[in-house]
Image (cartoon, rainbow, N blue to C red; front, side, top):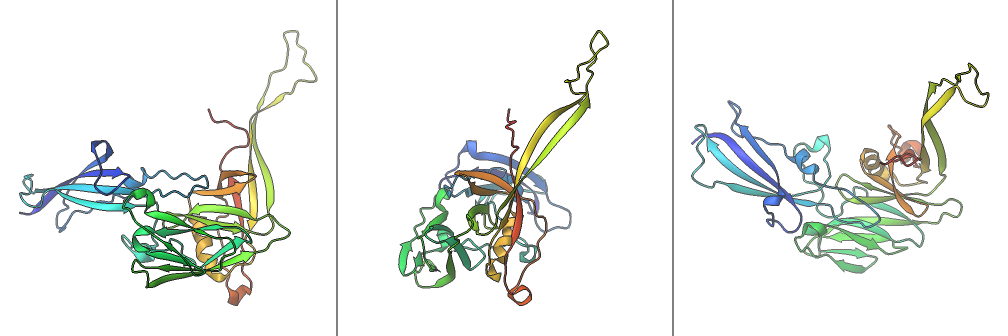
Length: 327
């Protein structure tokens, strides 16, 4: 019985795996086999991504979802297979990505969900470490253990372990609690002159990651507007000297920030790269968590060999207009 086509029902939902209902059906896909090909391939990542809603307000929630694909197989005559039909395939989806060099369907980290082995925090400030609950048994911070449990619910698959203020070393262990998977060094920065700003972004693993900018911050303001030629002549063929002829309209503005990381280790190049590529970025600014977008479009990686000391200055723009025009 040769494969001719498939019908795929795609369910996207929260909770535990397999707990979907008819209301969670998001797509129904049909595809015929291409002549000469041994199988049928469907790309579902972009479809699922439409149903991962990323929000952040310093709450560090897991935004992963379960995906169940129910596949019905048909032969070349359009008749359904009489064995192992349909089949269900379950996936846990996050809003992450792989590098080109990692090829198709890369397996992302299953323990600590950050690429670098360093974290920088202001002195006296606690932090957050994202981990994948399925692959971690415990996290040890300066000798103190935090046991990780996995209930199977999508809302806790990505968990955020609190890093106590002024910690120094984080060790992430496998589910056997003995196999060391990753060691992270925490550097606590005393910055007496400038106010550090915390920027949070969605990294390549689909988790929230914090990056502090410790040094000089420059705020700027850019205005956009339009003009039209206004008729100011009255019915008496006169006009007022205090009425403008060039009328300004559609006036608005955007605020930009130029932030500097201060000196960091070369290993942090990975973090800076993922920040540049993130579609979701926020800053803690004047008591609010506000969306920002990196406007720097290129970066030159700095290394200890070429540059001795590594720091980065990055331009950001707030993700909203200064004048509220939301209707």
